[in-house]
Image (cartoon, rainbow, N blue to C red; front, top):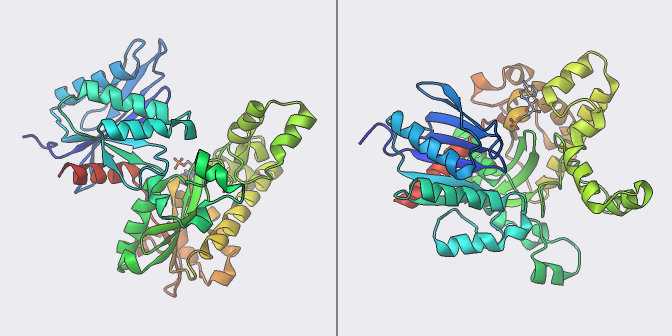
Length: 394
Ligand code: AMP
């Protein structure tokens, strides 16, 4: 036995990168964190932080070879995980909870591949590579979508012919489930109340953004839909637009559907509006320096965020707390304040002093003690994956 023998290796596999983290599920400590990137190219590299930090080139390693490097790194660091937890983007309607990897689970995940063609195949590749690298370890899949499987049909159905749902699984799924699930549980702790009693809106604001209405610990509605493009303004994604925009752009700019998809996913949102950057911190600085386009981007971001938060309260009937998380939600006092100023009718009473110190000295609370509360809650998706994995191993 070594110090890490009950720790979990968490793997998040992208098309050319693998993020990994060795997490102690009880304490939440990250014993080792690293990134294998530019996989498949000559410049593939591995970097890590832990007791010792380091980096090395790994030739033209693919996912499998990169994970063998991680095995070696763990061995020389004297760290032995008890299991491996994988982030998987889409679990379709098959998965409303995390599950152990077996042939049936893999087949069911493959069957949802068409719903996330850019993500699920690489997530599955990561699982296969990890099975080869750690043949003796149990593996678990934790889905971005599963938390939102509790949404009622009024929230998950699109008003299009019902057969499209029945025959092609066209519906709203929602994403960022691990983050929303983590922060609502933590918010209940911060508020000192059982999660089962609480009506919460959780706003995950990072480079990708989504908000969710969570009643008694169950997701009732969320802003992302069939894909992560729906909903809030994001770093490079537009969020909601008129569905006829696709046809209109195809006709007026002579773009293909794929080009419109790329425009809405990669060139829109904060980047598209500002023409400057997708980075909120840089935009706030540029706005301060008088850049009008940066100001427009932040204004639209905050307005649409407030509007969607208000609409999510419909699913709850009341609001006990609004939670801010993700890089922007946890760090930008300005975005939080601007959003709350647009929601006076919710009774959220901003405490400017607590907000300025990110609520750190008031247990995350950035509103005065009246209800509802506004809270800053730091997310840790890797810890949630580690905890789900540890639970399934026992
Ligand atoms: P994430 O994807 O969760 O890492 O979040 C990335 C986003 O958080 C980027 O838009 C960053 O600019 C933003 N961010 C991080 N720190 C700050 C900060 N201090 N103020 C404003 N935005 C921040």
